Length: 304
Image 1 (cartoon, rainbow, N blue to C red):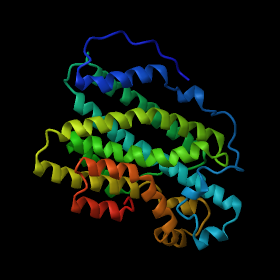
Image 2 (image 1 turned 180 degrees about the horizontal axis):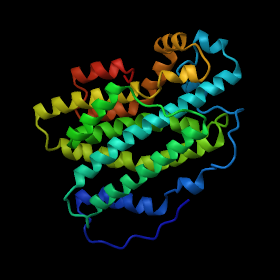
Image 3 (image 1 turned 180 degrees about the vertical axis):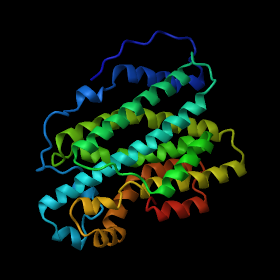
C-alpha cells in the first residue's frame, strides 16, 4: 500500500468542497501502487479462474455443462480480460470528461484537487488492467467500432449530470462483480488483488460521482433532465453490452456462434446483472433519471 503524506490544512471547507475534502483525506490514508502491490512476476496458474464462474456469460447454460473445467477456467480468464479492456476504454473517457469539467476552475480548491487525484487513480487503474489482461493471456479486446465512435462523441459533448451519472453507471456495475471476484478463492490471486485495489479506490470515485450528479441536477430544468436521463441510459447500454467481447469464446477454444447464442439467452447472467444494479437504479430513480425512454434502454441491457 502506498502511504501518502498528510494534506496541509485548508480553510475552504465550503459545502461544495466538503465531499472532495473528505475524499482527499481518504486517498491520503488508503491508496495503492499496482506496480508494487500486484504480483506480476509469478507465472499464470491455469488451475484458477479469471473471474467467479457464476459471472460467466455462459454459466448455467447447457453449453456450460458440456465444458471441461479447463475450458471453463480459460473462458473466465478471457472474459475477465475483456471486462478489464472495456474498463480501460471507459476510464479514458472518464478522465477526459473530468478534466474538461475542471478546466479553468480554481486549482487551489479541494474539488479540483480531488478531480486531479481521481484522474491519477484512473491512469494507474488503466495500466493495471492492461497488465492484468496481458498476464491472463488475452489479446487487446476493443469495443465495437460503433461503441468507440459513440464514446468519442459522448466524451466530447457530455457535461454535468450526464457525464457524472454515466461514470457512476460504469463504476457501479464493475464494483459489484469485482467484490465477488476479490473474495473468491477460485480466482487467480493476482486478479483478486487487482479487484481489491479497484474496489477500494473506486468507492471514493462513486461517492464523488453521486455528489456531482445531485449537485448538477439541482440546477437542471425539466427538458434538460429528460434529455440527460436518455443520454445516460444509452451510455449505460453501450458500456454494459461492450463488457464481454464476442471474440472471447473463440479465444477460449469454444464454438463462437453457439456460445454467442447461449450467452444471449442466458437468464442467469441477466439476473446477475439486474441484481448488481439494484442500488444504482434506486439512486437514478431518486434523482429523477428513470424516465420511460431511459427505462427502455436499461431493460434492453438487463439492468432492471
